[in-house]
Image (tube, rainbow, N blue to C red; front, side, top):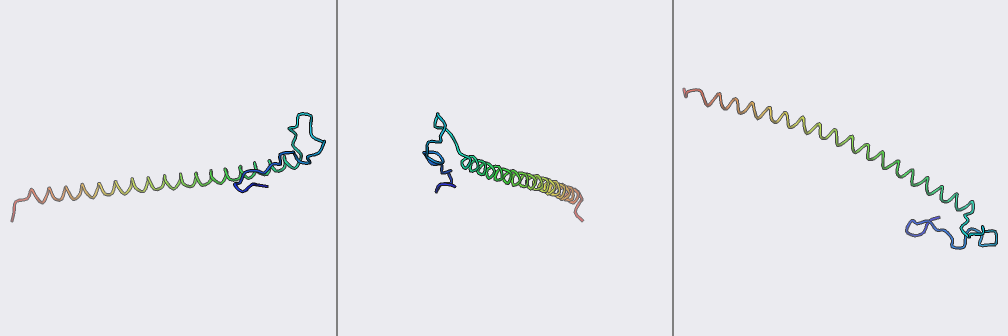
Length: 95
């Protein structure tokens, strides 16, 4: 079905190599069409699988971005609280 590099193996002389070829010599037999259809189905399946992986990765990245945004906001709030506390403690006269 496939050559060593995954390329389709199509015989040079056509399916039968006999005298039943079309006049232009570019005819494909049923076997070749079935093989091409099978390869197209495999390609379609691979593309569907890649699309599913892409959608999953996209969802994971969105979730990661949202988590990072939340963490950054919490860090900023903690930093502002610490700065406010330091300002309040620094403005009080020593006891």
